[in-house]
Amino acid sequence: MRKRSRVTHLPEVRVPEDNRPLVAPIYQSVKFTFDDVEETLRQWNGQREGYYYSRVSNPTLRQLEIALADLQDRDACLLTASGVAAIALPLLGLLEAGQHVVYFAELYPPTRSLVRRLLGRYGVRSTMLTLSDPDSLERTLATVPTRLVLLESPSNPVLRVVDLERVTAAARRHGALTMLDNTLGGLHNHGRYDVDLYVHSLTKYASGHGDVMGGAVIGRRELVDALRDDAINLGATLDPHAAWLVLRGLKTYFLRWEAQCANALRVAQFLAGRTEVERVRYPGLPADPGHELATRQMDGYGTIVTFDLRDGTDAATRFAEALELFAITSSLGSTESLVVPPALQQPRGLDASQAAWTGIGPGTVRLSIGIEDADDLVSDLGQALARSAANDA
Ligand code: PLP
Image (cartoon, rainbow, N blue to C red; front, side, top):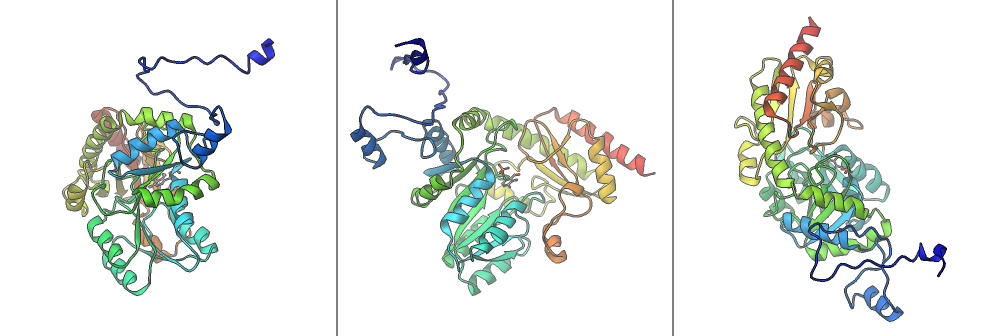
């Protein structure tokens, strides 16, 4: 063979069977081959293990699926290229024209939009409720046959905690499936509740370093497997390199979660003592309406702290700009602390009463707490509160 051919058909370097890498390698290959057609066909037909094309399956993705399903106490997981793809997939894969979905005003805005705009175009009916009126779910399920209830706990950004036992029991009684966006809840939480599908944005806590996007749908095998063909054909597959980065992030998941939850509690306690702050929402605070439920349902209260500044949007903008350790940007679960001021999170596409349901007011600020030193975070928040008030004078 000449160099031109040799360089495209390199000799394979094999690691001996008794000599394993400590860190699992990335299978950064789109294609996998067998020596003959018969074995390829057997793999296609599910008669033997193996891989053929990475949009269908890939060993690095398989490794991550196993890890995430285990964290969530289920036996199956399907990976997607982003968190919203993980939300969109069951909506497209489970629902038919004429069926009905219940969702909530407090949900992540693109989820609301997927239900209203995308599903609406395909003839799926929907009813939007508020998490702050739990009785309305029971009433709706009793009057409208419903295929799916979509929820988040704690909700983003105002951290309403949902009674999962009550909601899942109501859905089960009325023959509806439940899908919980558990991104804020954490990968290890809520597994003991009778939720049919969990979805996660892996962009947040799973990777933890703000450098990779991904999503996961987790549930019992037959339900997740029913979505696989649509997932393969829709093509929003996670790339093996992204899956490997998430696997790397997962190794420190509990360390980060615990450190960030402890920092968040410290920040919430600090903000609760400040006169500039009208209200702090953090389920870890005993005064929070979700405290009792979150204590029962969750291990750790989460790393988001949301609060309302008395002086409204302008003061909150000054506050966010005065912060030195917190970056003004979206997303959460990174090692760095982040801030979203009210000007960047006002509800869109909702009428006034629905917008009120979201709980986002003119002074609502969302903090995502990182792993910095808690004293530094508190002193940064203190100086920014002082500066935003001083500028008002
Ligand atoms: N669900 C929640 C609760 C989120 O906060 C986000 C992103 O902020 C998503 C889903 C979407 O995730 P991604 O950005 O990975 O698509």
